[in-house]
Length: 138
Image (cartoon, rainbow, N blue to C red):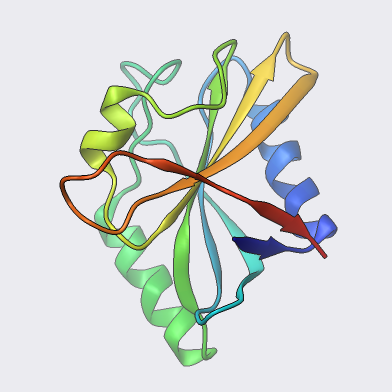
């Protein structure tokens, strides 16, 4: 289960809607532990300009810089979010190939620029598929 405030959750939805029909992407951060709680969401640039409607890429240098900043604040990267314009909120084969164990992956389906649904996905072992993770709004 991942806990997330309604305000941060709404920030993520707004980013997804604003980016439509392209995929948005970002980082979710907070304190790890038995009750993983997202305290902040950080928008990142989708650097995949060729396939921005069905792929996202986060610049590794920007991610490293953000990770350092978060550690200074006592926070960790808990996972990532991205949108699926006019597609379901379930991970694609590409999403699973790029995913890393231990992180949460929030996927926002944006249908027609307004209607959204969100699911979170995670896995613990390299050889296992994504499993849906409950989102608890706080």
